[in-house]
Image (cartoon, rainbow, N blue to C red; front, side, top):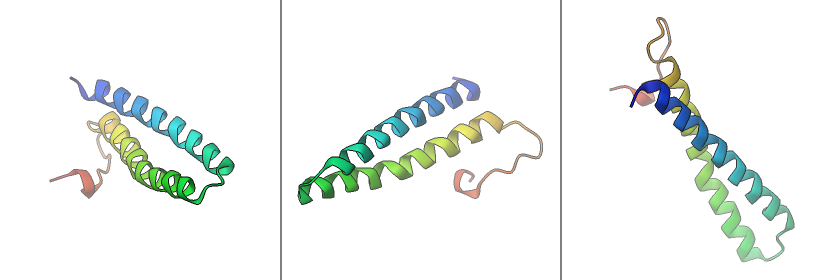
Length: 77
């Protein structure tokens, strides 16, 4: 698999996560049960860092071979 293909996959995963987070936020706005609210907030808290990581990896794989592109220490050895 090439980096460009990986980038597309990361972008697609990020798009799906964004959709799921939007749905969870709508559910949260309608929820009244404290336990249900807690579960929804917890799921949002779990998915948000995943979305951030998907976006970061999509950018990294898109621009990996560009001269002068600064790579985050987070994804380098």
